[in-house]
Image 1 (cartoon, rainbow, N blue to C red):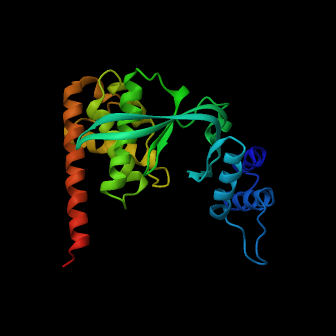
Image 2 (cartoon, rainbow, N blue to C red):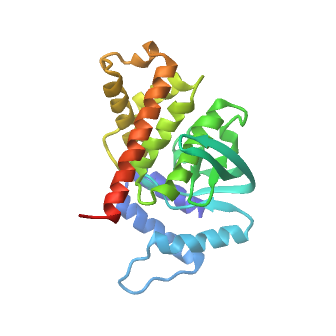
Length: 264
């Protein structure tokens, strides 16, 4: 299975096939491995295959992540995991979150494949719990407490409070939470956000970065011609502004939800 995914990533990333053709070839090649045969004239869909892939992987003692990590189909594979519960402070209150700590990876997904495992996902959130690639973090560091627990914990909270919220908006709120609580890592975060912006919604992290930096510069009335304008802003001011933007966004989402429930 891993070899099949790696061929798919390689062919699509190097432009030998389009993303759509690559996905179709991936499904067609994986189907016989899990005993699925399509109906005549009806293509096999990855959403149909992935539960069966996961079942077979788990039966062999492994864990996996499928789905899409934009823009490619994902396949992370690891051998061990254990669960911990953390109490996470968030702007709207403390949230108890269950975290699956993941170890002994066989595949770090398409990002790891493309970069020799230099870059890869450090974790993700579902509506039930968080998942953490343990080797990505010093568990005693601010980076773990803020950029993992607080960021992913905000996703966990928003999944319950605003269930229809889409990826770019989820990421915007979670990145604001990072800035609300960051101390030693604040300037490092702002530099990363400024360098990794995108105006494409299909890149949720990049889109959120661009929106967040635009909102900060507008609210603080700073000159965007200065590439590192945040160096001259006191960290307390950054934190207070991020909290203001977060609260404004929460109020806006609350009003939108109320309007949907009680249309004129």
